[in-house]
Amino acid sequence: SELLGSDKDPEAITMKLIKEGKELPKIYMACGTEDFLLDKNRDYHNFLLANNVEHTYVEGPGDHNWSFWNEYIDKGIDWIYK
Image 1 (cartoon, rainbow, N blue to C red):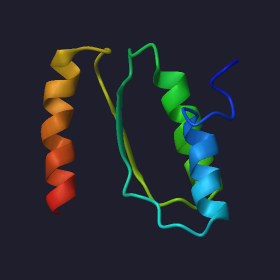
Image 2: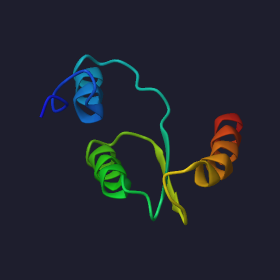
Image 3: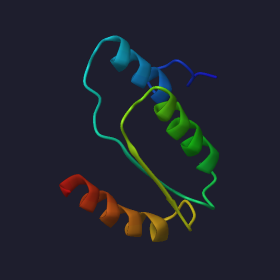
């Protein structure tokens, strides 16, 4: 796939920053349990755990739509300011 290892691949980007000794940004991830990207989000969450990358990962009921995002945007903003 063109994504794997590219500058669009979150795991490749993360590993590059780690290898270069650069500070990683704070990461907040939220995904609906009915989202078609749930497995990809869980995979990246587990990748971050395996590489000791500090992050916040939450799941909640919902799909890949504005109903879910509207709720979790507010939670993400609260996370930023805590």
